[in-house]
Amino acid sequence: MTLGDQPPPPAEFTRAAESLRLSEARPEIELEDLPAPQRLAPYSAAIGASVYRDDDELAVGRLILLYDPDGQRGWEGPFRLVAYVRADMEPEITSDPLLGPVAWSWLTEALDAHQAGYSAAGGTVTRAVSEGFGNKADDPVTTELELRASWSPAQEDLSGHVAAWCDLMCLAAGIPALPPDVAALPRRHDDQT
Image 1 (cartoon, rainbow, N blue to C red):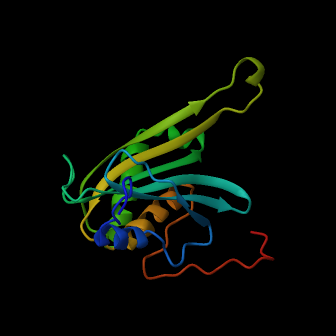
Image 2: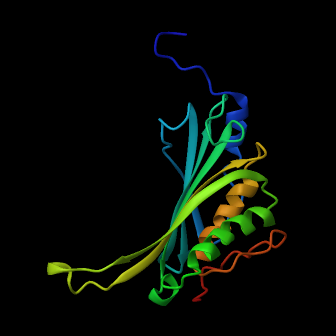
């Protein structure tokens, strides 16, 4: 090993990072690898996703895997998942006072449905209204939901966590989640719906 060479990542982290890549995602979701933040933990990996209906992007998100063999304060174990989801919503939905608890339940219920054991979950749900002024006065008012969450997975295989995060993004985009034992049918290219 020469000066500046990094040792290979621990096998435990490598296996967990590989499990972030679903073999099949719902047809509405496009997944991609993203650069991972480098300062939050000794090892990290990240994926991003977009939810589409036809050519319209309805929601975007990131899921970050953090690994510290010694753990960190607030973690319960060496792994931590950090999720971000943003979706455009109708103004009447974002003004509903129950949106925060409902959006949080989308995450916890999806984790439970996919039997993705977790602990030490925490996060925020934010509603944002964007209104243009000046030369942007003619832009339409937009409203969106942002959910930021983190939790400690109970197992090294993170595929259930990724599936739950994908369900969360679909729910935020207004697309119902599929039961865990039901596979989505791929869309035909000539479908107009």
